[in-house]
Image (cartoon, rainbow, N blue to C red):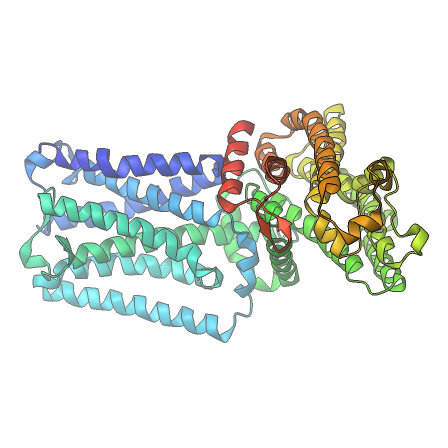
Length: 575
């Protein structure tokens, strides 16, 4: 077919690139695009002279009828486009796989790496050096190993550079975060290449290749080429991410960050002595991420839509809230409850109290944020203390949610305050000042937090009953001819189902009133915040749809596919 190479792009590479772009569009940000652009420029510049040499040396050839005609340094424009499109496709796979992960937690090996990390890094470096030397040997010999040698002597040194720069980080990442974006595009491009070689769209001269095929017409050299180049692209992306995460992780080194960290900041992150790294902070972030993955999957998934230091701070905030809740829940006596809540209040006062801030000379938006934390967290802790009443209060006070007003107060304490703190963090990182719009956002966040807590209570009626807790107001139960004690005995039944739906109706009414105000959030935070809300409200929608909800460890859950669909829809609507 005439212009066969152009048709390869039109049928195979461009459609895949478009599909990946559509899928990734809701989570793409400015930094992703800059990373891809940088890698495209690097890969194009590095590949151009190498590919030109292959053609000049008659290793590669293209039938005249298979290409459009124009060339640069003897390279057909279609081949030049391949440099770009392959880098883009593999980068998009990398972004899709890695965006859900909070990568900053994997900086653990930046200082004092373990013996295992050191051993793997040295072994891979030796392997890449050996591949380079072996490639040079094959090139010197000429003959059947020439093309393989040229691949190894070109790709291995570039891969070695990225490995030296970011090997510790790459090793610390879960293997799937690097292997999946290497393997998937490699397999796809193997299939594309095999078809093109079989049709004669391009060819490798027989005297320069080994003559072995992986399958069909796919020469072993081509298989090695795509495996190595995709590895190089993924390692390049990981190198950028390592430098970015160093910038995000350590405010002691980088106090302020522009919307897109500058190239100079990336260099500084590489050159900064690791002794300046606050590794306790990295460990704290790691523990926070693990806690949320285990105990708040909806929030952790939603947090993936945020970026940079804002995401880190939101994860730390929510994890602190969960930890405080667990300390109270796991207490064995009222004295232990008082002990932990007292320590939490003391901790907050030491870090965020007025005297501490004055001594530190904190000012501006940071002072406003710290003051709000100091004001709101004690309210949150008071809400957690309410949970302890179920276990340690005298019988006549064992059920503290006496009426609807008590329910509202409790929900405002444990969830409304968290909503306000999230908005405060967004305002801090996005540069919002105290305005009427920000006041409206905080008020809406408080109401939305109450709505989410109502959904949480509606979901966990049975789980809470097994813990001796009933959060439905006693007055509601009496109106139904029931009581908290009856719910403890039989948490399932027509009465609890009616009250569950009543609670959900109130949750969705609060949600409907607060949801439009979320449009006032800054663009970079609006979509992710909507994802966090919608993922949780989806639990309420499932509870409304059927009594036979999906159960996991005693709790209604949203199927993973539905959570992802909800997140994508929310991001698109918020754009």
